[in-house]
Every structure is written in C-alpha cells, then in structure tokens.
Length: 480
Ligand code: BG6
Image (cartoon, rainbow, N blue to C red; front, side, top):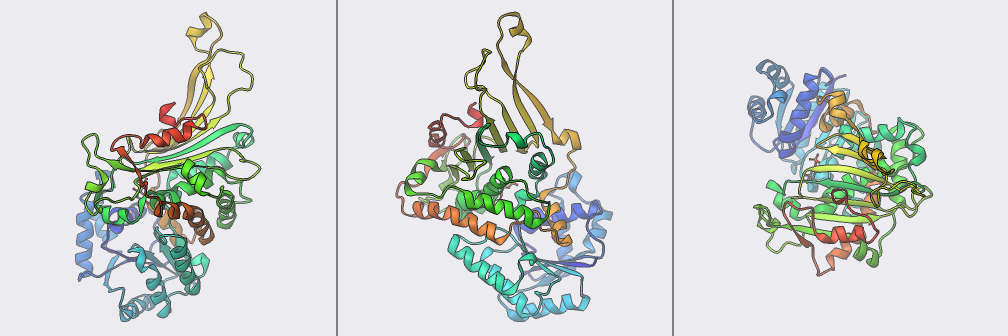
C-alpha cells in the first residue's frame, strides 16, 4: 500500500517529540507499510537533506534503545521529504496538490500538528485544491475548539469538506497499551461484568496526576487550563471506557455509540452542584519548585486552573447513584495515572477487619501498567488469636508479563490512521457531547471571582478536593 503522510507543523514540537520517534519505531518494527513518503510541511526555508539532518540530530536526544543506528537512519531518512509552505497562501496548496497527485498514493494522511486556530482554514484549502477525495484522511490533534460554540464551528467546516470517516480525532490516551488493556479487562473477561454495577460498586476514581509543571508551554496552557487540556478529552474518555456498556462488536461505531451514551448520561450541572462537586486549583511555589504564575508565558495574576477534581454520576440503570470522581493536575506529588474501582463492603461482617475495608481493583495506567486486586485474607499472625482479616493483594504487572517493548500510543495511532482503523479515535458527536457537558463549568468559572485554590507544587492538590470526596464518606486512593 503506497501512502503519503503529510505532516503539517513538520518542524513543531509535536513532530519532534512524538511523531517522528513513533514513525521511526513503526519503521524499525517493520509495521510501517512499505512504499510510503513522509512529507514534512513548515514555513522554514529547508531542503530535504537539511530536514533529514535536523531529524537525525533530534534523535541524539532520544533514549539509546529508541535511537536509530546510522544504517537505520539512512533507510528511514530516505522516506522523509520536506515542503516549504505558508499555510495562509492558497497557491502553496496547489504545489502540495501537484506533489501528491504526481504520485497518486492509495492513502494520503494529512496530519495537522499545527496550532488549532489553523485547522479549519487548512481543511478548506485542502478541499479547494481537490485533496479531500476518499483516499484522504485528516488527523486532528486536540484541542478542537475552546468551548462548545467554537467546537461546533470547527465541526461545521469539517462536515462541509470531509466525510466523518475521513476525520481521525486523536486522543492519545486511547492509544496507550494500558487503556487498551482496560477494554480487554472489561470485554475480554466475563469475571468482572456481573460485578460492574451499582449493586456492588461504591465509587470509581480516575486520577491523572502529573509531576511536571507547564514546562515550555506556559503561553498555550494559560489559555487552556486543566479542564480543557485533560478533563474534556482524556479523563472523559477513561470514564467512558470504565462506564460504557459492552459494545455489540469491536467496530469503531459500535464502540463510539456506547461511549456517546455514557457522555449523554452524565449528570447535568447546576450552579449548586458546580459549587459542591467541582474544585479547581493552581500550583503555588512549594518543595523548591516555582509557582504557576512564575512560569514563562503565564500572565501575572492568571486564574487558569492547573488542577481540577470533580464528582459526577452516570444516570442509567447500571450506575445510578454511584459517584465517579475525576482528578487531574500538574505539579502533583507524582506522575501517576490510575483508576480505582471501590467495591462495597460485605453486607454482614462476621470477621474482625480494618474499618471500612472492602475489595478494590486498581487499574494502573502509568507509569506502571497493571492491575491490583485488593482482597481481605487471614494472615498467619491472626490465625493464632481470633478470626481477623487484613488486606492482601493480587498483582499483575503488564510490563513484566509482556515486556516493555509494547507499541507506544502514537506509533499505534499513526499505524491505525494509515490502515484506516477508526476504533481508537473520537467521533465528532462524542467530542461535542463532552464539550456540552463541560460548558456550564467554563461559564461558571468565568463569572466566579473566587478563582482557583492554591496548592503547593509537589502536593496532591488543594485540600478542598479531599473535603469534596470526604463529604460522601470516601477518600482518594493515596489517603486510603
Ligand atoms: C496532553 C496535554 O494532551 O497530555 C499535556 O496537553 C499533558 O498537558 C499530556 O501533559 C499528558 O500525556 P501523558 O501521555 O504524558 O500522560
């Protein structure tokens, strides 16, 4: 299969950090279809050889095991081409069309690793030069819009020039092996299904904690914040994966239909519930680390949230009344993403056991990828005295079991785009529904003079997040 992959933003951060390393890994693993061209597009005045040299230099910064040997780069570099384009200039698209039409590849992937403000105009220009035919697939990075209205405007343009199945909306969390394991756990094993409901589950917690701050992305992040950057997309996709009904098959639309239903069933917000069930925070200096407003590119006195926690419910027969908590933030105590499924305690205890003890399934997403099933057991010490139980756990570490050389998120997603597999991409109605659900929070914050609560960099976020969950009689996983 001959493909052309056009990488708009070919000299940008995403191309350097994620896409080129992922394409190289696919090349090394022999999974990148042969006969492809990778055409990097950017404004810089470069030739093919100069661009190849830049990429080769970049690989020097990559960990040794993922760095190409000179021979490998020789062969991989031959796939790389460079086209200078000013994306605001229609005649430049004509040049692109000439380059692509001359070859007539079976599949043309347009990867928009550019500023989101360019998405609609680039798609319109692609269509204007006739490059929106059925062989074309367009990949869009998040964020797709800033709020519901701007998101709908982008979608309206996309619908005018492309068919839904040509649009690959990336949420790189769906490409993570750990997230695919979550689908495998739920829909490849019958064990948990009868327990996966309100009768047995007390609450579910989704945590995506980052130890890093905003790094070099202060200016972008200050316009974005945790709700738009992490919750509207990654966290809600995880919530869908954990809460959705089993799809009728593994086709993209069957999976997306079920995820959409979860988003449509989320409890709508009112000013009262936002006040009680949503906490926003911003990191202040702590543990020797600077505060958010001291970061480069961040406006002094900025009210952008770098942390948020919320409580919601999925209004359907399976989940009615079960709280789902989401929490994410930058500069937290650790890089740790996991989901905790807390089961209800036994209805009538006959043993002595630690107060509040109950079964718990922890799904580790990163940096560890594995499962922990917390049980209660009778240890040797207790057998000598009176019947009493203490916690014990079953562990499954996917890296140990399957090796760490599993396919990375971007590698997997790029191969899926080239092969036309939409399963791990987000459909427009899902994305729109997610924006619709977060919109009242965005509006509420706009008019709320209180602003985000400060938390010390390197901590677990503002104490209000613990108070919120404590009101339901629960606590976050690290407080257990
Ligand atoms: C991105 C966000 O989508 O995800 C970043 O824009 C965030 O702010 C990143 O750091 C986290 O991804 P990962 O794969 O490191 O958890």
